[in-house]
Amino acid sequence: MTIRPATAADVPAVLPLVSKVEAHHQRADPQKYTFRADPGTMYRGWLQRNTTDARAVFLVADAARAGEPPRVVGFLIGTIEKEVPIYVLTEYGWVHDLWVDEAYRHEGVGRQLVMQAVERFAALGAKQVRMDVLATNEPAKALFANCGFRPSVVEMLLEVNG
Image (cartoon, rainbow, N blue to C red; front, top):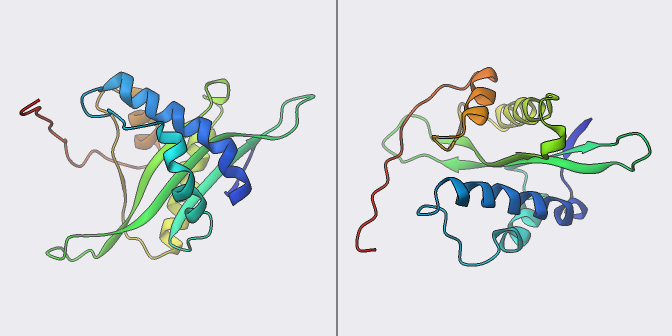
């Protein structure tokens, strides 16, 4: 398994994985995750821009099994975000999405992606790394806890006028 920075040439291979992330979110909470169109396709330009953005962390996991060429089996995309100015911390790393193909889970790929992202964010000067995790996604919560993350806030959602 090789974890490396993504390039623009990787974006077509990442798009189907983005679609899997978004389908997972939509199944888990369709009221929150209702998309206007195919989110994978909508992400294309943003992903391409983040392959060259010095303040973004976009990693892919390449794997090759016997008799197969290397292929992208996971990704992590994150950016440096500005904090609200009332806080001492001025910016932080934000993990937008992480996905590892089901056939490659439980092999440490997710952990490698997360830990390399944390290192990259630290090198960019981030003092914190944050993300949202679905309340029902126990495997993701366990992965992040094993990488040193702790719960911080609970997001609450209420449907109104709808």
